[in-house]
Image (cartoon, rainbow, N blue to C red; front, side, top):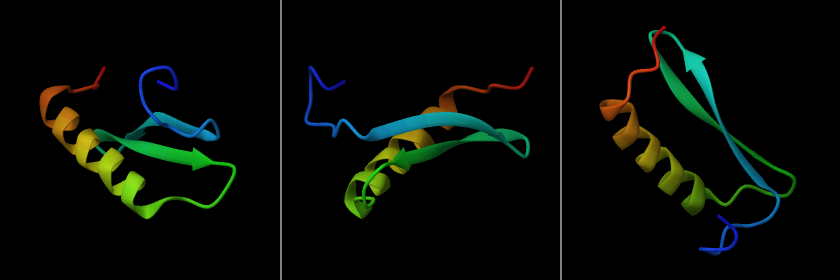
Length: 55
């Protein structure tokens, strides 16, 4: 992602099980950027409606 956009190098996004679905976990070494986190959550919400990760 760093090659194609301005993502910070200290940011990691993981997908974790949550109840009957999944959630994103945003990890950063520095302070979290609220605007960027909101954008990531919005993208995750859209993807969650398209992809079900149940086994």
